[in-house]
Image (cartoon, rainbow, N blue to C red; front, side, top):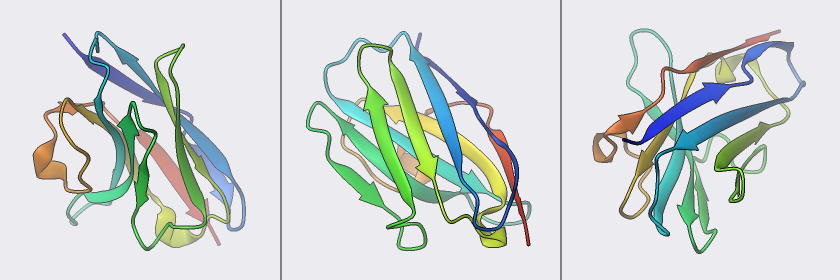
Length: 123
């Protein structure tokens, strides 16, 4: 059974940085997708970034491109989301998700989710 567990959230001031981690266990495929999403109360879950396992191809939402970087430590089965130049609009619960197929920045494609880690950015 595949499980993902997020960590690394916290509170930072605008302009600061945080690095989120997603520990993946039970995933035995050599391909597939790891992705980060975020959600604020009352709004839909938003795709932030995705990483294609095997090729290393990445994709980003327009709102974070150039500020966030998704990566994977294959040996440790950990996916990271490095976030820089944070602003209050980045405040949200951040979720890691996994799927065995292609990457999409749409939450409906994913069935494996972590419980999330909260990121709060103050102005």
